Length: 141
Image (cartoon, rainbow, N blue to C red):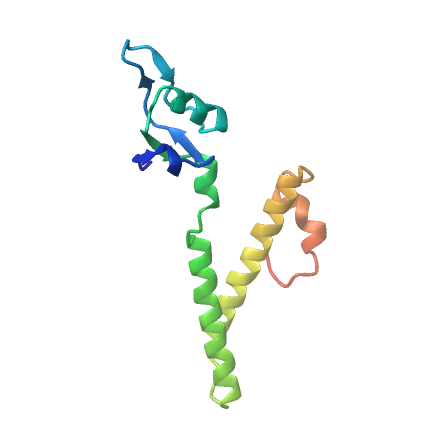
């Protein structure tokens, strides 16, 4: 978690107060880990607080664009498939072992994603419950 010193004018709703803000009498004005809101900003302004230490809320970090391991795998698969189709278009020999490996990986991802979707919907508890949906696929679980 990255803590930054920011001015009140730079505060946004996805920020959280990083440390207790106290007045001259050592009374807590705003407790640490309090999400920034309009009311908090008004309170800080009332006490003439111009800067504070903040960090991004956990939920806002989930929205930050990051390249995940799955995205890297997808990009690698896409490049490999492009290469295979280019070879086919040029009349070159196809490396079936590479093609088989890619299709197995794609199929595995499809099954994992399907399992995740059903699990999130609360309908199915195990991969075995997905067998009726996967019976036509040319693979084993």
